[in-house]
Image 1 (cartoon, rainbow, N blue to C red):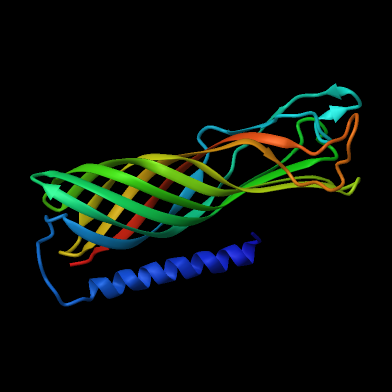
Image 2: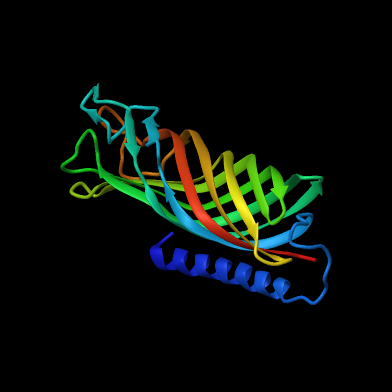
Length: 249
């Protein structure tokens, strides 16, 4: 997805969720105090995504970009992406004593990307990766004390992953755009500013995986020293950020 399309889509999601959050916060019904964490909520979040551990990619076959004649030069390459991340979220909490159990869904648009020279032909080939969207569905378990709530979370994550390998001089480009499944685990701390409005900070680690995915390359050819790439990937995304939620009550 190009920069302007992604920016517009991300702005739309964020504006919708923030609008819904503010409308919910302006509702007139009252129940529970700031130390009551039970109920539904909506919100928006924004932060920074980076890779504390490099993303590991592997060619699973000899191909145009990793061979010299009949010799395979290697199969591993990696990235260290980073970029803005933000979007909307919603969930439900159930409080029992000081313990709070819950579930949350979220969708984020990202500018998480990196571009590097090829490890095999660094003067002529370029590798680029990006993750456009991330969706999560996670359970939360935490401890509440008055207006404060600390929690851990874990569950499913999926992301729209792109890989583009180019050899401009030869006019050869291989592309991959695929949904990758994985997991999310993290922790966070929230503070109830009012009966409804909650401010929080958090950290999440997201792992996404691709297994033997075929790229698209019409000019990669067939035969010795040629071929369309197939790839595996272990993608590591670390996210830190702030969030604003409103309890729907």
